Image (cartoon, rainbow, N blue to C red; front, side, top):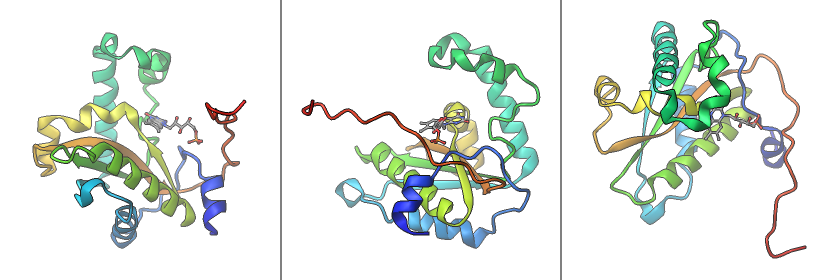
Length: 186
Ligand SMILES: Cc1cc2nc3c(=O)[nH]c(=O)nc-3n(C[C@H](O)[C@H](O)[C@H](O)COP(=O)(O)O)c2cc1C
């Protein structure tokens, strides 16, 4: 896919085919992701890949329960209460893979760098017919001490992007955006 077409047509995908993404494809996507610019050349990223369906389902249920139990802490999630209360709703939209990006806080730039990596991975995936969605709902539950210990994430790495990823089932229309504000132009 031509690069401008790729940028112009990439959407967040929430319906996936059952086919599992092979490990070499994920490794390739991560390598492409890490070609981004990196503050002070520090490359402060690390990744966790989860492809166990039961684990993904249980992380979704645990996250929904955690958010509902702590709802008052997260006023910006109020509009999603009905989704979270719905027993059929999977926060990862039943994706067969989670790709989680962590940033090393020893780099001042870790959030910027890892967000760039996420963007690159999303675009590269889109060009391969693979859909992605940033799952902000999971930003607390995939960043706990217990979770990080379970998946070997060192303490100094903090979660930046939880991403669900899987082969696309349907193609969406290109994103529509408001006209960008350019502050110094009328
Ligand atoms: C930081 C961030 C957090 C997001 N969190 C979620 C989420 O928890 N669940 C979800 O379904 N989509 C999530 N999204 C996707 C947005 O809802 C989506 O990008 C937006 O609706 C625009 O749609 P598009 O990406 O298809 O153009 C998130 C996107 C970003 C950048």
